[in-house]
Length: 429
Ligand SMILES: [Zn+2]
Ligand SMILES: [Zn+2]
Image 1 (cartoon, protein in one colour):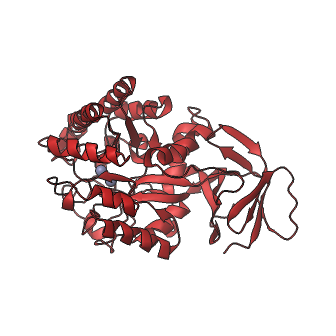
Image 2 (cartoon, helix red, strand yellow; image 1 turned 30 degrees about the vertical axis):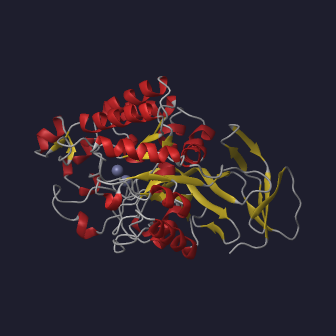
Image 3 (cartoon, helix red, strand yellow; image 1 turned 45 degrees about the vertical axis):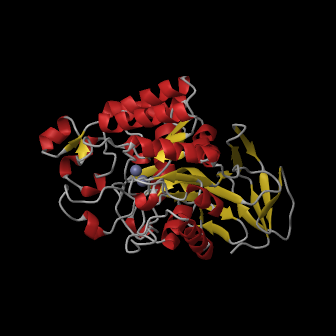
């Protein structure tokens, strides 16, 4: 629990908006940032020694799965938002492929209220594009928006009927929301791994890259035609990065995200048939991985999102073909990205943090994350030098499906402040 007054002293504050890093203190009073400046004196405040640490706005994950309602054995809104907070995500946007799906005002309210009761990361739901995610009739987009939905998507499936997608884009435009497209072209999407040398060698059914790129192409063209905003989820291959780059040159209102597993791993990892490497879209080749990294660096890809997809061990401990795709992602995302983009010298810490804060906020129409006086305290404390090894004992998610166990990483979210309720310092600094 936070004291009424708290002084985060001696940390380096990263401001993704200005790109500046300043050595300043932050005084938090009643859950709000009361002062930001050098040498703040506040004798009665709880003093948190942040020397050697960095402080940034809390992260926003615009693509995750919290599984409630319907799959509470894999995750609940409570355990998912706890896991998010440990990973530095103070706000998350769950996808609507629950059971029942989030396709109505009542379901949107249910998720927001559940998260408020839980009291960890706040939840900004993504509603379904179509009723019951069936791809036929539009869901109640306007009333879901009223209730607090921030985007629409049939994530898990592509909206294959072009007339339905066109209408979804028109409606979403009227309510100033993006449509998030899970791109998988019908007839090319029944594989379990990337189609290529590795799938042939291992005898796995392949899913070729045009499955993703062709679907993205149709949705980008429809968005341009309608003048709506489309967001391409979990970009995994080089051709999709090229396509989005081209679309941005045409000034299409397209944005895109990449997940840490796609910029970290390739299909070479499938050699052991470990189902923790089975994700959708599948891990691709090294040239694809490099293209995705380049897309993040040159701004073609706007956001890093986890696609946190918890599954029970029953769903994963089966043969590769039958295992559910997806991995948990909140607790490793920051560190994997930090290594890939900042330690490698490709991006500054502030530009990297922008992909986790300002960019998703802009796309989802959420309050701008900042470290400004007068705003609610929503901060993470980072130890950028910390080397740590991810162990299952640290996992707060209800599910443990991750290929990153026992991996040693650099850069760690060591704590944070969220409003009046939460101050956490979980990892010994
Ligand atoms: Zn998806
Ligand atoms: Zn997803």
